[in-house]
Length: 168
Ligand code: S3P
Image (cartoon, rainbow, N blue to C red):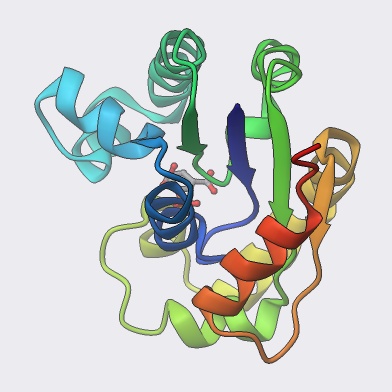
C-alpha cells in the first residue's frame, strides 16, 4: 500500500500522514523533510539562496525517489501538484486530498516563520487565495479520496481516511 497526502499549506499533511502511518504500521516519508535532509539546509534557505525553481527541482527528485518505497505514507508539500512530472508519479499511489479553507490556513499559519511563500507576502490572505485558484483544480484532479473540512481534529481525519480506504 502506498498512500500519498496532498493539500494546501497547513492542511495537516505532515501530522495526519505521520499518525496514519503509525495507525497502519507503514513507513512515513515527509517530502519537505527529505528535501532538507538531502540539501543539508532548510526550505527557507533553499528558497532564499537558490530560488523557488531550484526548490521545485529538488521536490521532483525527492518525490520520485520516495515512490520506490512500498507500504508507506508520503506527505507532500502544498506545491507538489504543480508539476506534471509529479502528478504522473502520484498515480502510483492512493492520493488523499485534505481540503482546507483559507480561514483555517490563516489561523494555523498566524505565527508561521518557515513557509517562504507566506514570509515573502505582505497579504497572506490574498497570497493563499491566489495559490488556491491555481492549485485546487489540480488537487481535485489528482485525488482518489477527498477529505472535506469539518470540525474534525487530525485524529478524526485519520479515522475518516481509514474508513474510506478499501482494504478488501
Ligand atoms: C509550499 C508548501 C510547503 C513547502 C514549501 C512550498 C507550497 O509545504 O513545500 O514551502 O508551494 O505550497 P507545506 O504544504 O507542508 O506547508
